[in-house]
Image (cartoon, rainbow, N blue to C red):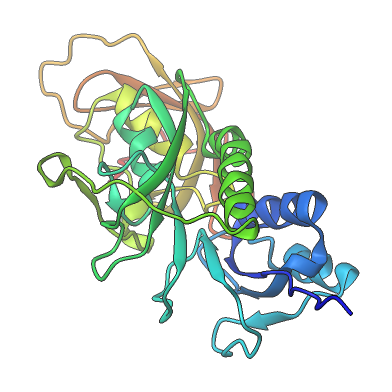
Length: 296
């Protein structure tokens, strides 16, 4: 009687839209029996974290799904981590990172790439190392971009890149091929710092084009750019640069015009017309009722 060979299985540490898409594609291509477990978590920093959708997909396919504080009991040849932000204490771990390493190692890389106006965005698959995002790179994929570009659209643009890379790497693992990568060039490494609520605040001393990119980069599924005024705190969701004028006493953050109820704000360079602004409770904050408003 021929001895049955066991099918290798993979573990998944997943969050967000990209994590859901990777898992869905993996099950479609390789079958649910190749999934040893899925670990997921809530993300309080976004308005939609896809945690329920990941749970629903696992339940539909009979896949074990765990909270991040639970330890997987099932054995996995490798684990794949997508949009994961915590340390995973295991070997044979493939991490998917939102940048073209060694640039933008660390946190919120896609947000910072959009703020910086990078000409292309993408994903790197790498083997985990002791220092975050510094391990050997297995493969990368990129897509060119132009601006204006909102974060929600950017996520949708790179999600297929995640699925393609994960499918290729998972296929190699499941067929018994070795997983290896190329060492990163440390001289080209840059780092992207973590962000908290204070980092949503608009810096009006910057130029209007950069502030526009910032507003688009921290919009949905994030909470939106933060602007404090002498009337309260607001979220700016939509804005557009407008032609500058000569200002003899330039003071970034002050409203210079109100056009059809929409404030035009002085920036370090250029002007920015706010076209959609909401209160912290989600109500519409336009039209602007007080001309003498300072954003800071």
